[in-house]
Amino acid sequence: MYPDLYLYVERARGRELRAEAERQRQCHRDRGDSLVRGLEKRLGWVLVEAGLRLVHRRAVDY
Image (cartoon, rainbow, N blue to C red; front, side, top):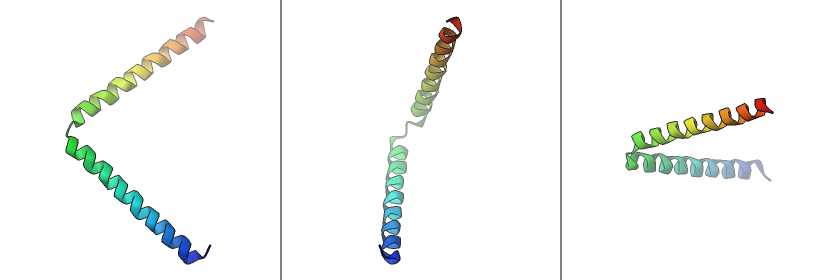
């Protein structure tokens, strides 16, 4: 592949990725439920931690 074509393709892909990232940011801004999303994330991590503790406890018992 010619170097010029490679750079053209990479620049086009970069523009596509930046546009997609901006669309995602705009979508999250428009929803306005950052408090709910934050609570969901915290709850998810609490559940992960509880599951890891249960797995560790069973591994120690055997």
